[in-house]
Image 1 (tube, rainbow over the protein chains, first blue to last red):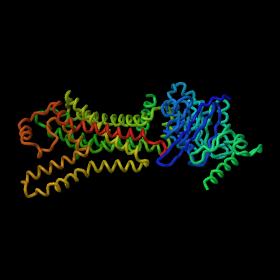
Image 2: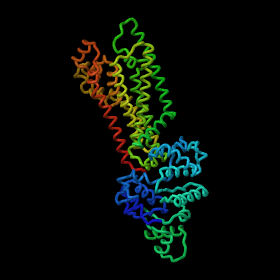
Image 3: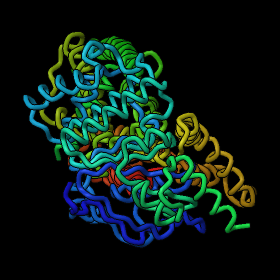
Image 4: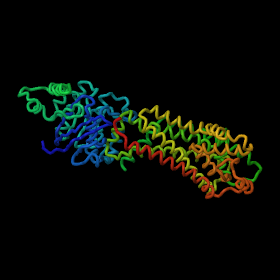
Length: 255
Length: 319
């Protein structure tokens, strides 16, 4: 793994009215890394992702994605980043092929190449036999897999996955996580994944970041977090336990 | 540009395969068919035994058929077409969660709203053009008259003006779909505004004209009072885009009309001229008369779209 940081955030801050949603968040993500982004609902994870994508302008602070500034060059960033939003929506009366064709057109993929990629991707995510059904008739798991196919269509270098396993059955969610791991290993994709499913994040992430109330309270590999930051010695802790310690610590500080 | 054309293609596909388009188009086709048929029959009877005046062909559009003329049909139901095509264009994407996906593609943000507006305008254009062609073909068949070159130019201008008129309602309903998160709210707002401007504003004008002149009821003669009331009423009616459109399009289609104001508020010279000279207005003179009205319609359309464009660009993705 190279040590080059391809995503950099420096003091990213977003204030809506007088609510600070993201508060001076700084981190860097290296090429080929899976970064787990954790935190309770409303901690500012999605807003941070949107700021990295240029879909939301930071109140202050800067970000850089593969050398591009998301504020000044959002299109360049979106060309290399595949973003799967939480609760992604679909056009109900299109088939998966039509859906992917539309996404492909917006990414200026040549027609011939697009046809080939769509067939490959539908096979890869296991939707090949459902390719003539309408998306409206899809189950939650199938939709999520189609969503993954959508973000992979542009052959991105970075994936932003916002709660990709939310609402999936245990088996479907395990498959998806495995699939992400394979993508990372085989294609060298850098993945930023936000999830509430801590064991799964622990399984695939190289490093994690924990956000609480807009602040990034922890950053590092699980080992680093237990040994250095929390000073818990050599004993192995699960991510779940670490998460609880941070969560509790933050609460204690306030009271 | 790639993103824009992709969105236009997708939107056009959506429009043409949607049930609402089929219903709208069917309604427009049937009504225009009936109206022209009746208009053509009426015209044929009226012209029996007389020498044919000029611009018979255009009369097809301005002669009342069963109840109203084709002009009135566009003035009344054009807005409906615009509203139905636009009221859920942005907020439906938001509700179904596809807007954020569109915006995370490498396209410019304005391609989304531009593409949607242009695709709907193309749809409106196709509808209008086919209606005009149906009417023309029908006229040729029943009346046996061939349109002259000036008539064709006038028809083309009428087409452009109607496009902007319907475009105004499209832009307005798109604005509502950007501002209101709920589809029902944006539909309701657009329809309420349409009904108010088209049906209640003239009534309001009536009431205000009477109220405004109540002080002078004893000072003025009956005619003066009537003229004053009509003037107030016509001014208030100008607040409705429908009035602007009816006034300007009727002059465009009917060259024998020389003014947009009704006969009672004409000045003496105007009255004299219209009774003295029966010749139709030349095209450039007609244009001169309707110029301010037509320009207002175009300006309102551009303004309305401009506002929805700006609001959409500045809007937060997550709200």
